[in-house]
Length: 371
Image (tube, one colour):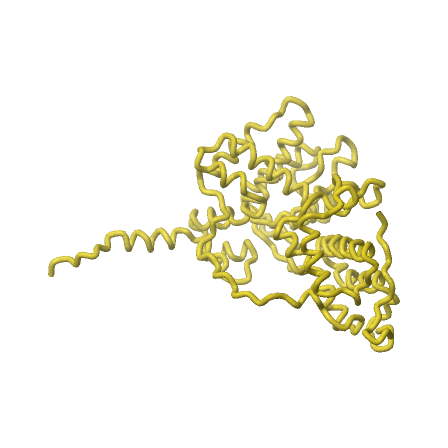
């Protein structure tokens, strides 16, 4: 399956937009490439956007359509296709490098959240090409208006004390009978320490280097390159630094990271030599965390198993916030560490406020006390 190049976009009158366009693209492939180039400073975003647009162009090519010919009906058809790519033999297959002969665009049907993400990306593409006068409409913006669902007041996607103890037990029970198993176990321990003690997103970890950690006035910090290109310095606790030292020892590195050190913060388990310093992808991080949660569900109390089975990497970010607040770390500091735009976002994890409100209301009775 090749990445086909559709025909140049035409106006309804059949005249190329090139006369009025703000970009010099001669066809859809060049227009998409220019849009993708706008995101060169964010490699993770670029990779995600490239994947979504390539899938869509392949789908259009099979129907003999260009971007200018996309109708709202096509958007709805593509939405259904993402949830069930057919024929599966042509579109779905195991993960392969892009240049592999057996590469397929999909690993399986997309979840509802992934479908929404894909349509959002494509809507942004069409909006850009409309602003550039390359296209004359955006069928992704035509959608049924819905009343926004009320946002849940509480945060449920976090692990309570019992769940977290089950996770720690699962990490301690990982097999270590062979050198490779020991490497996998040590990496899993480091990854969970990193996610839990820093509250970082998995994409931030996947793109991080050891050299992003630095010492200032006797304290260690991690300079995180986050969403939207935002850079922030997050404090490193003693426990997190000890976990780093242990992980580096397993890699044969000195205890303290060096300025500018290019070794990935989390590495693949790939053997000896320089190859052991290959970076771990955010998808691999997700799969490792899910595997540990599955092990934890096997040893957890019965009423906690469904929670652990549903948990993902992002739950560890929520858990970090909840546990830090429960431990008495001030709300403002937790908000700064997690890089929330608003204190109200962090306040959702402050369960002690709910507990205090409940305790204060507990003694209320519908029978008034005697005067």
